Length: 200
Image (cartoon, rainbow, N blue to C red; front, side, top):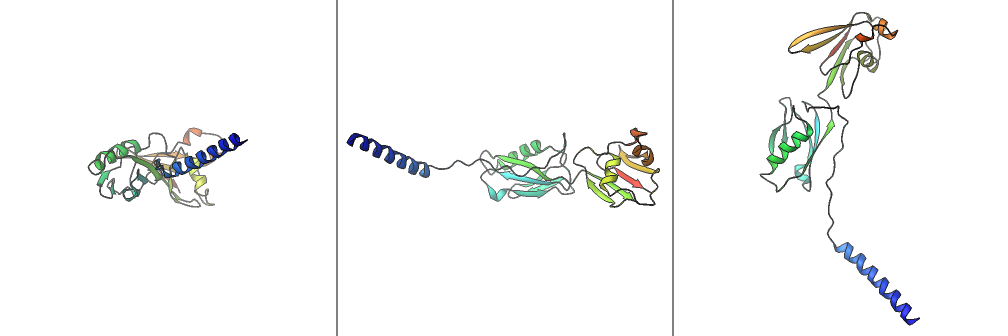
């Protein structure tokens, strides 16, 4: 019985010592991944996009930045870096190269927090005209629905989609009456960033 009690005491003391040792050991910190917005495949950063830049173990250099109209972002201590026209992975490489002058082996995470550069516009006789983010595939019929639908006096059969291609503006006709009845569905084109839907 005495041997049994001795063994139990040894186990309890060992467990207590182990827990103290675990508390004394330094904690290893994993990098924090900033909130991410779903972006379309092949997405390139553009003006007005909001990016979450996170430097592992360096909160002072981390934060949210908005891409300026000139395509640049400004980071604390690092300075100006071109972001427009790059993927998040390429921008990560650029930032790490620039920060290597200040940090040893910088570890950076870049995520899109707000996707504002990809927009389509709808104007005229709809419920809510204005710009709308284009975060995924969207057709003419869908943007009309998102914009609150056609108003009572809208000329639904003379809707036009305006698009700039290689510096030249093109127009595409859209007859709402046909598409809503399942006819002429080729008119219901997929919109591209910068397109304007005009509802007379």
